[in-house]
Image 1: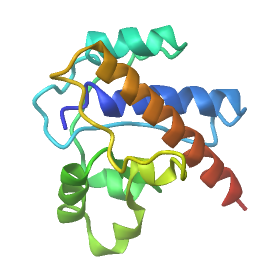
Image 2: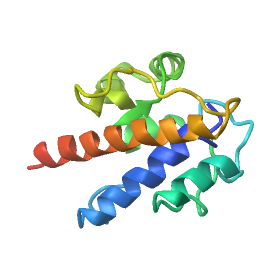
Image 3: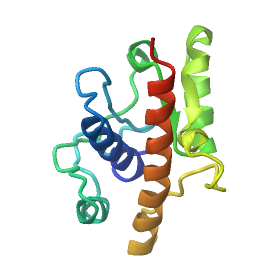
Image 4: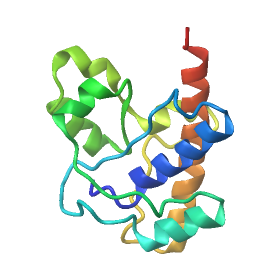
Length: 150
């Protein structure tokens, strides 16, 4: 929601997967929140620490709120949970509805969850679980994009 935990973690992980795949410049990655409360703030220190331990750098990311232009600009507008998915659907023009999905739709059959839980009010283990789910989703998303490129 505020773009300081799950979404910037997904941005940082996916950005690294794109780099490793040699696709920098071909895939643009960004994240945003559905509220502007944290706009301009870096990711939560716990999210940054957990990501750093796995080799992902989130330090240059800053929170921002969803812009109506995002639906036009991006091919995929992904939500971490059903509440944010509903928000996206309510604020999106009908012509771009097909761009909206849950992030874990791409995680594959080995991931039983449909939503990435918000770790903000939990302990460090929650940030580790978020990373596990996000890595699975990012891996699947990149494969999906690669297999659907002309």
